[in-house]
Image (cartoon, rainbow, N blue to C red; front, top):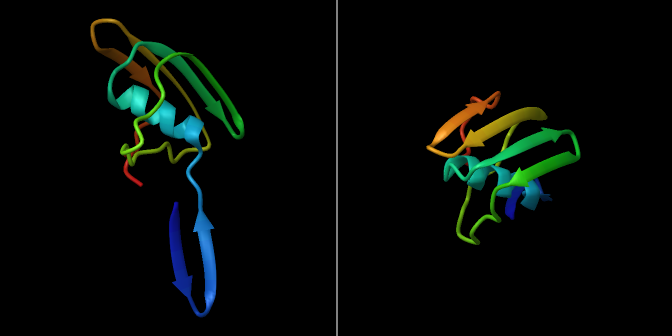
Length: 82
């Protein structure tokens, strides 16, 4: 959770744990099929993210396929950094 303070207002940005898990699985090249579209998240395969993993997905929609042998096909081209 990240907090910002500006002009007396406090804004909290929470990271979606499912998008964090997708980012972790793509980053670690864990085989699976991943779809995210708005609030819909579909993961066939993959893994839960470690507590210390800071990354997340920053796009509204995307599809990714990670095959055994470290082959990845993804529409996501951005960074996983927060």
